[in-house]
Image 1: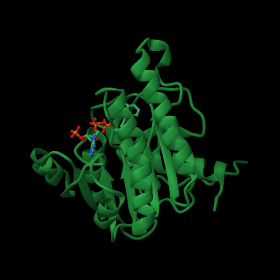
Image 2: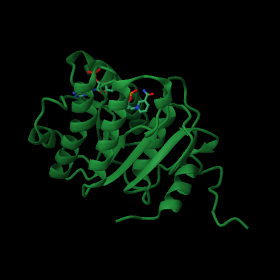
Image 3: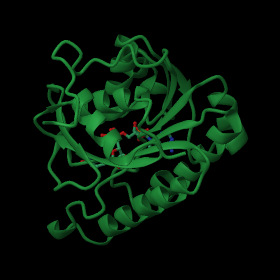
Image 4: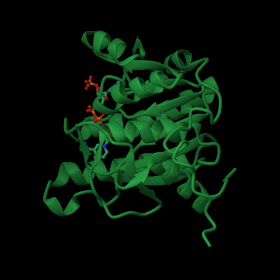
Length: 243
Ligand SMILES: NC(=O)c1ccc[n+]([C@@H]2O[C@H](COP(=O)([O-])OP(=O)(O)OC[C@H]3O[C@@H](n4cnc5c(N)ncnc54)[C@H](OP(=O)(O)O)[C@@H]3O)[C@@H](O)[C@H]2O)c1
């Protein structure tokens, strides 16, 4: 006999009724994950504010469904960021230096997370999702020093976030792919690394934000065979509430 209650097909992959609508602040909103996340949040009744640093990205952020706001995780102070975050329930951090050098990696993937976490605490936006990476991600691929630095910085940001009082979820996706999502994933505390489509990742983050039991945990996620809601329930049961 299975101890896990399987959701009926009707409710699979549909957590719209779990929790009230959220106001979510996206850091990295003009990026591949950020734009897809805004679209799925808004489609499911949440609202999104999308922070972008380049004024030319205004229209792309608006088209994703988010309300655009200019901000730079390097230049903004904690107080300036906190003012932007006021009134939001949650922050999703998917900004990244994207191979623009070690210094930028340190500032965006590392220090930026610390700054955003401090601003979120100050603003009372206590739910905080960090898009991180598999700890051993593609290290055998010979990407070299810059990539080693990236992995080290991502790890440092995770360590920092787990030491805060925020209601954090660290999401480690596999290699990110474009292309339409199918809502089928594999999620767990420790997985073999496989790719994931950004659209599946965005849907996963939206549902994770609304999952009442998924809190203060690290989840690895790849494309797979399991509907997102079901995968999230299994992960939540394996970690239990952590307050
Ligand atoms: N690529 C992969 O296979 C992979 C695998 C695992 C994890 N990840 C992680 O997944 C996350 C999101 O990926 P993605 O595909 O959405 O990346 P992306 O398309 O490069 O988006 C990242 C966004 O962050 C923004 N950003 C960079 N610096 C900023 C700053 N100082 N202030 C404000 N915004 C800033 C970028 O804006 P600009 O356009 O102005 O630069 C960009 O819009 C990243 O953190 C990445 O490390 C990626």
